[in-house]
Every structure is written in C-alpha cells, then in structure tokens.
Amino acid sequence: MPEAQAICQEPEVDFTVLDRIIFDDYGGNREAMIMMMQAIQRQYRFLPEPALQYISQAIGIPLTKIYEVATFYASFSLVPKGRHIMHVCTGTACHLKGSGGLVQHVAARMGLDGGGTTPDLKFTLETVNCLGACAVSPVVVLDDRYYPKANVGQLNRLIEQIDTE
Ligand code: FES
Image (cartoon, rainbow, N blue to C red; front, side):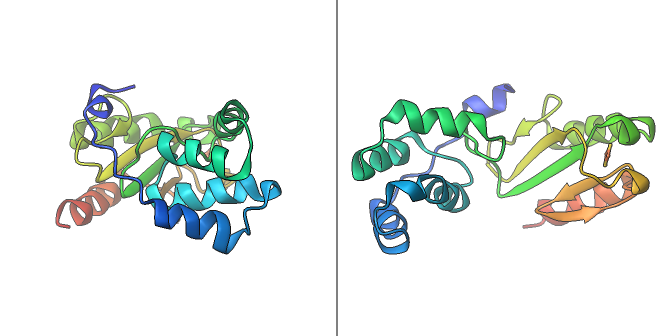
C-alpha cells in the first residue's frame, strides 16, 4: 500500500443513508447483503468499517461473514478510493504493448508509488489482469470508460482534465 493511502481521510458515515439502503431499498433482507454492500461501495467508493458493523447489526449477519465477502470480491474495497479510478491493464497482450510504461507514467504524474490513491482522494490508479479487449491493447479504463490503444499523450489529457477539477 502506498504511503499516500495511510493519510487519506475517511469520510463520515451517514447512518440515514445506510438505513435507506438497508431498509428502504432492500427491506432489511439478509439475502440482499451483497447488494447492500455494493450500494454502500457506490456511495463511499469503499466499504467503511462503521458501515459494515451497522449492516451486521441491522440484518443479523456476523461481521466476520461480511468481511469474508468484502475480501473475496475484487470489486469491493476496504480502503478509500479516489473520485476518479483508472485501471491500466497489465495482462499479457497489454504488457507486450507497453502498458507497464503507462502505469509508471501515470503513477509518476500523480505522485503515486506504482499505484494507489492520492492523499486528496481525487484519483486512484490500479492495474488489472485482462479486460477482455486484447485486440485493442493496451487498454485503460477511467471511471468505467474504455480507452483502447491507450498512449501517454491521451493519458496526459485525461489527467489534465482531472487536475483542473
Ligand atoms: S491483456 Fe489487456 S485486455 Fe487482455
């Protein structure tokens, strides 16, 4: 974990939001635990510990079980992520087309040590193994939008947009 992540400020958990998700949206139904966790992840961009404790008590599922699920699925995060999330594919096809250099370039520009989240929680850089688009490698995804045949110039423009926010 990069040092920057250690100083990220976690957001306050709003329990009225949790009540809306747990009870209004899913009727407090234990079977909907994963969907509740997904909704909380969308809300906070990670799963804050107080929120997991609250779900545990609200629907009567042990906290250890909730953590098991949270750590099993790669889509869940237990640490805060940035408002913008960039995934750079480092699978074989993308690696051969230079995605490692893209990772290094973005990390250097954002002051990250190979990946992670900036201290202001504006940006997260992560690598993934294969995005299923090898024919147009190297592939980068920023905030769920795909950028095929990504290059340094294009990534610089994306970073500049983020910087100006
Ligand atoms: S290896 Fe990158 S999309 Fe498949």
